[in-house]
Length: 224
Image 1 (cartoon, rainbow, N blue to C red):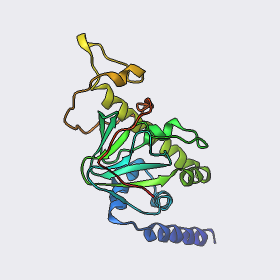
Image 2 (cartoon, rainbow, N blue to C red):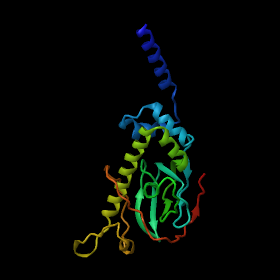
Image 3 (spheres, helix red, strand yellow):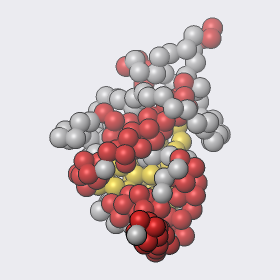
């Protein structure tokens, strides 16, 4: 009897796993980011459904966010392309595939708080990304603590990568290195450098906390 129950349960779980299917981009995202972390397809399906299983296109030179204008109301992960981050027209760093577009903004707010982007994010190439609405993602976290912890680790690692990308660029005379979290960091002239794929670190930081302002952008893509 016990064997029969276990066998039926095994068949049911196997059916559930095999019945989970995704579009090509979500399958590639799973293979590249979530599967190496040991995330099951059934858990991944909950994450995908939370973003309505949609991959959004952002055309070259269109803006994902504009400094001082765009509300912080979602969390987005770049699937393909490259995003340029600027503040007051000054280049800060790039965002590459499998990196979040707005992890510092997400980390800077509590679930009940609202905020505005203090940087401009512009597509340097045609881009594709997935986005989770803030409130909807927090509801998912409340139901599934494991997913909440997973995103906490991913976001922390992503922020650290952005922190290191900035730190590598900021140097003043005689080898002195500015602390990028200080206000005067944003008045330092930063020479543009070729994009370099970042290494992966699991640390937390907050590299994008800047004074308000508005930067012109060729075009703005309204997100839904």
